[in-house]
Image (cartoon, rainbow, N blue to C red; front, side, top):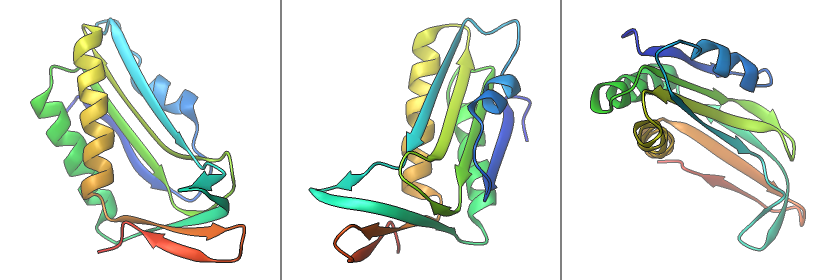
Length: 141
């Protein structure tokens, strides 16, 4: 890992925003952007009762690769990305990404690239359970 990539993990335990912020604490960064993705109670007009995230065995390596790519392509001091796996309830934190940079614009651009690339490339799949008893897989190949 490069010095800029400070925290990358997949976890079955609840995610802690304070841990991500602490991992990116430094004196040189003037801006820190943070995105917290939570489980919502609806999707496309249907009530969601909960969901499960599953990860391919290569998902952690791919997440690390994505973080390294964002660090290399953006003028940042720090990058962190943590994704939850397992069963989650409404309101639970599913993903936390953050970046630090000297200036806010760089931090915003890097965090946007980090979450968007993570969602597109990291093999983590969502199995949604709906209030009406139906279910669906999202993000599977």
